[in-house]
Length: 298
Image (cartoon, rainbow, N blue to C red; front, side, top):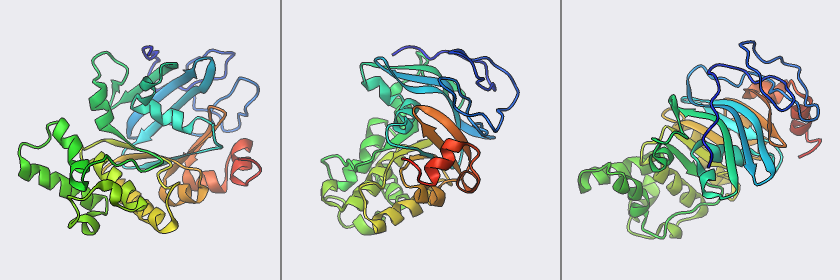
């Protein structure tokens, strides 16, 4: 994996033929994609960012999967990433905790800061990074362990509990915050894989928050769930944002409208538009965003 290319702070990527110039002038609201030249519409910055991504490019071999994306992830906020299948949403969030490191042909360029720290710096411990930036996947993936051990696994390996009593408190607190405690408090010794699909996904969320992350990445967390289980997860997301920054990839525009405060629209590896969720869904500024939201494609 190559080191992230450094760029100056608080700059805006400008239109250019394969290069990026830097300026303090905000992005204009009426830029359109033309060939290989584009600029994101809307304000991709956040007043209180946990993560700052600047000029991020991702390659899988010769495939340029993410093209010059800049985006902030704000504290105590939910941001939804929407767009057609294959547009780069999941690839982008995998950059935020270096999950792309596990793919031999992947190369990531650009700067990604977590609380001002370069996540590609040599001193960055990737294991600790993935504890600070947790991930919940599309399909629930509980470990083949008990409910208790699923949640206790992270605190054990990171040394977050000095004794069994502290570990019990972490497990209970995590299950309570995931809205699962009352359903499993008498089943802690049973396999996590024996829970229903919605319960398994909440167990995975409990496992993620047990290590005290700053950011939670959710890659289509409700796509395999029924409407009732989906409603539980959405209510949980609204509660979790009080303590975490949350990024959710979703194909459901209704879900994005319900759970997020900001929405970012991706198209063919480019971040086309970003803004307040209400504005994106009621008054999109870019033609591609409007076409997607109104169902003309995607």
